[in-house]
Amino acid sequence: NAGVMQNPRHLVRRRGQEARLRCSPMKGHSHVYWYRQLPEEGLKFMVYLQKENIIDESGMPKERFSAEFPKEGPSILRIQQVVRGDSAAYFCASSPRTGSYGYTFGSGTRLTVV
Amino acid sequence: EDKVVQSPLSLVVHEGDTVTLNCSYEVTNFRSLLWYKQEKKAPTFLFMLTSSGIEKKSGRLSSILDKKELFSILNITATQTGDSAIYLCAGLAQGGSEKLVFGKGTKLTVNP
Image 1 (cartoon, rainbow over the protein chains, first blue to last red):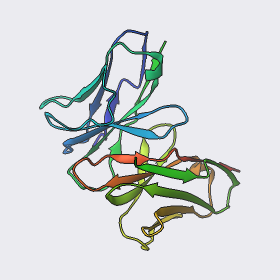
Image 2 (cartoon, each protein chain N blue to C red; image 1 turned 135 degrees about the vertical axis):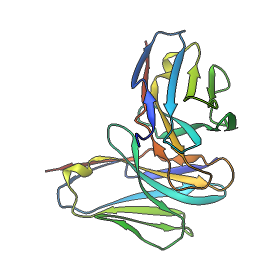
Image 3 (spheres, rainbow over the protein chains, first blue to last red; image 1 turned 90 degrees about the vertical axis):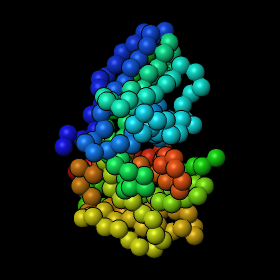
């Protein structure tokens, strides 16, 4: 079991470009969560998805950010028109079902906006 | 607004010392408290605590939850340099969202 796979590990974008972050959950896991970690800050919840459904996006900025988890393929976190303040580590986690034990996190994507 | 506060934010000890990390929480419809260890990469799961007063133990690490006083502690005995990491505490609420509310973490440095 390869664990939660995130790619790329590092992503550099110029201001105004788009960033696409990918997350493949653990085998058998149908719940995906995205968190953002700013420097010197804790992890902040962004969005919770199940296959083809967004369950809770209360932590997502209202503009420029979107997430999906299609029937086939990885979950994608998309940031349009990136700004310097988007520079952070973005972590994906997965779990097998609602109410299960602690998530399994991926190694994260470190986004740098220059 | 839900919040989790960890203390201290940073701690430096020598190998062999025992440390206690603190976590207080205010989480609406609280269900469980989780501890993670974060080195350079992914946070790795340590403990999930749901019941008050029951200690969970894994090797030199142990943790306990006090639901009346809304806090948890993580103890590490006989620390080793490999314990150096950021320890994250998170509250989990009941309901459909399953989102974790994290504290800022305690950065533990264990010197030889």
